[in-house]
Amino acid sequence: MEEYLKDPWNIFDISLVVFYCLYVISNYANVNENTRIGFNCAVLMLCFIKLNFFLRMFEGFSFLVSMLIAVFGDLKFFIIIFLMIIIEFGLLFTIVVPASDAYDRVGLLGYYLMSLRTSFGEF
Image (cartoon, rainbow, N blue to C red; front, side, top):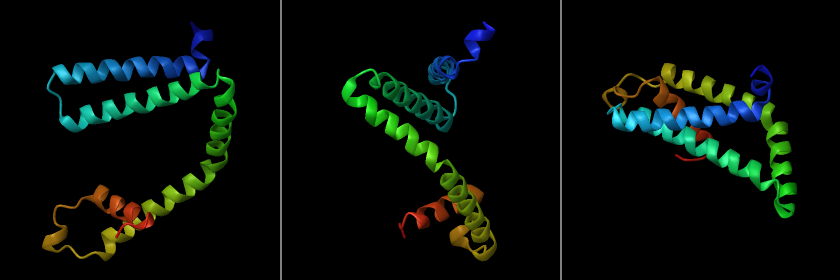
């Protein structure tokens, strides 16, 4: 069992089953809809990654999937710095934007989303 858990793909498969079970249980247990959406998104993302893993078996897709893995491996430092900048601007928005009636219901996550949308060019 210990040898089985050392392989990251086996842990990935276990997490896919766990998230799917949590999604099904949350549907029947009348859990908060945001929680169900989170479980559903996790299952969908894990299925997409698993599909890409299986596409490597076909000759036409193997190069493309390997290239995507290499690109995301090279971009990890950029993504870390980008997320740090988004967090910084989110904190700046909490300081700079006055607490008026228009921003009463905007929480800390809302400011982070505002800075993320601004970075994508959505005004």
